[in-house]
Image (tube, rainbow, N blue to C red):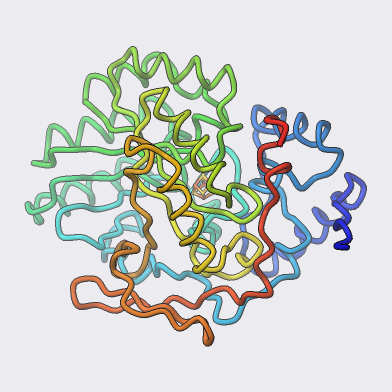
Length: 370
Ligand code: SF4
């Protein structure tokens, strides 16, 4: 008979948090930071479960494995953002594609996600205040000398941490002084503190037809207050999208994915992509072995209608995103998968089998009585 593993208690968690604070400053990881709004949902989860291994807790607080588990061939920055940062733009423009760029006006977020794939760069930039007006001059110059770019993605950090004035300045300058057709804004603020979606910001986004892409990772991140704000965003005619990574013990089960995307669809939020987590330093606690990940996606596809499963499974890389369909070879024994995109190869070091301890449905969907 298999013994049930002992779950982490609140008292043990306090020590894990202390140890993580030391580790994060030594290893350049983002420190623990959780908004009051999100913490209330985490507290509800801990109270119901009686331990700290629930999906929302794991998203923002460290687990034991986050500190101790290291997979072979982890990298500081798998997608190599620095490699794609454009010269003379104060690390604010990343370009991997011919027709679009990422503009990073801030490295600040309302909470720090434990699984953040950009934490190395964000940690380095943390505390460096960026003057929006000078970044914008560089952005306009860059866009006007690269007229092939038709889309700007506002990312970070989280651009929703900027005040209305800063966002307005960015959006108006792009729309009025460049030939860019489309602006996307990526954020997790909708679930960390939806009140940052003030009336004037929502009107601005509606007026300029901004595509809002949330990174909601689990169905329980959407509470009644978040629902109210989704309604408000829809009333402002803002197009809503989502994308998220598959994370071990957070959402690594086809039933969680189906419930999550079904709920998003009910709120008129279209899920664009599901991400394979990057093999970065101290990420092993979140990673799912590729063969299991593909099985989860197969089950998800077989058991859901097309309006739920018409989403891409992608891996971000230094050459841009590769899809599951771009997989050229997978050597399970040696743990190496090779993807190919536009003639460029992406080598992905898989998570060793013994390290992949799946999340259990009773914990992942604890509100649903599994
Ligand atoms: S909100 Fe996004 S950028 Fe910020 S810590 Fe979370 S994953 Fe990273």
